[in-house]
Image (cartoon, rainbow, N blue to C red; front, side):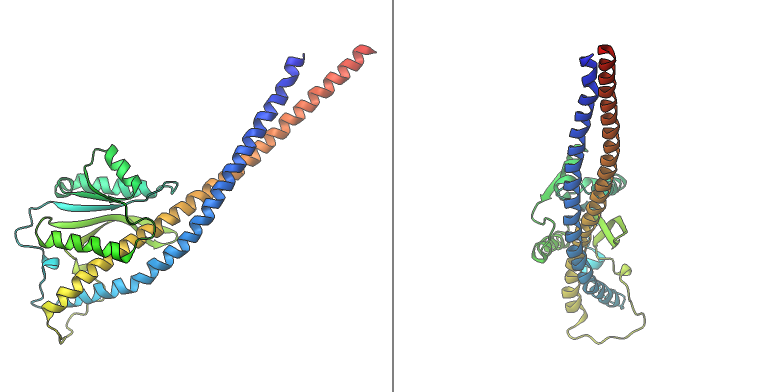
Length: 296
C-alpha cells in the first residue's frame, strides 16, 4: 500500500521540476526578446538613415548613365570578362535563435548557385558562422569567411570589401558580383534577395529624368569615375544594414513566440500539478479513512 501511495507524490514532484525548468526558459527567452527589441530599434534607425543617401546616389548614377555617350567599366563590364565566373557574397548571422532568417537566406543562395553555372563555378564568400556551417554541410566550397563585421558593420570595413570587389571586377577576374541577403522593407516584411552589385544596374535606379540636359564640371568620365564606386559602396553597406535589422526582427519575433509558448506550457503544467496534488490528497484521505474504519 505505501508503495502505491507514493506514486502521485513522485508525479507531482516531477511536474514541479518541469514547471521550474519552463519558468527558467521563459525568463531567458523574455530577456533575449527585450535585448533583440533594443538592438532592432538601433539597427532600424541606422538602416533608415542610410537609405536616402543610397537612393540619391543611385538616382544620380541613373541620370548620368542614361545620357548619350555615358560609359564606365562598372556599368557595362570589362571587355573580355563576360565568360568569367561570378562572385557570390552571402550574408547570414553569427548566432542562431532567429527563426527562419538564416534558412530563407541560405535556401535562396542554394537556388541561385544551382541555377547559375557561373555562380556555382565562381568564388563564394560568406558572412556569418551559421551560413558557413550550412554551406560546408552542402559541400559548397567557401572561398572566404568574413568574421570582421558582426552585428554592427562599420562603414570602413564594408568600403574596404567593396573596393576589393571593384578592383577584381575591373581586373576581369569575375564577370559579376552578387549579394544574397535579407532585404528589410518594414518591421512586418522582410524577403531574401539576390542583389546584383556589379556591374552596377543603372536601370534599377529611381528618379531618372529623361530629356533633362546637364552641364558637367568636371566632365562625365570624371564624375562617373567617382560617383559609381561611391554608389557601389553605399549599396553594399545598405545590404549589410538591411541584413542586420532583419536578423534582429526575426530574433525578436522568435523569442516572443518562445516566451508565449513557455507561458502556455507553464499554465498547462500548473493544471497538471494541481490535479496530481489533488489526487495525492484524495489518496491520503482515503488511507486515513480506511485506517480509521479498520481500527473501529
